[in-house]
Image 1 (tube, rainbow, N blue to C red):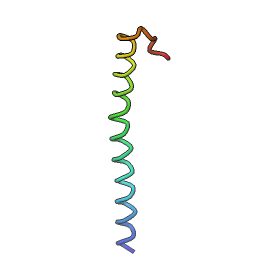
Image 2 (image 1 turned 180 degrees about the vertical axis):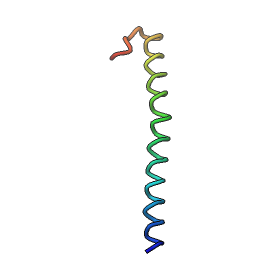
Image 3 (image 1 turned 120 degrees about the vertical axis):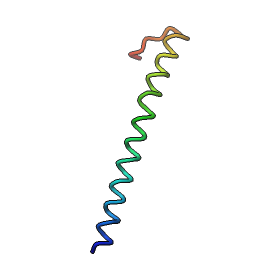
Image 4 (image 1 turned 30 degrees about the horizontal axis):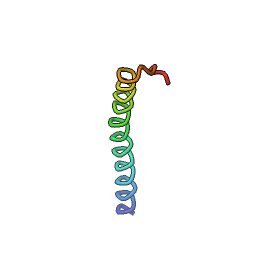
Length: 47
């Protein structure tokens, strides 16, 4: 029973770390991409 709980905990930790890493990378990347398009092509950041 203890082994099963450890596997479930590991899966939960892995899911949390992966989703956090994705958000930490993707949100700044999108903001940088929008700023680049605004400067380079004069496209509004809201598009």
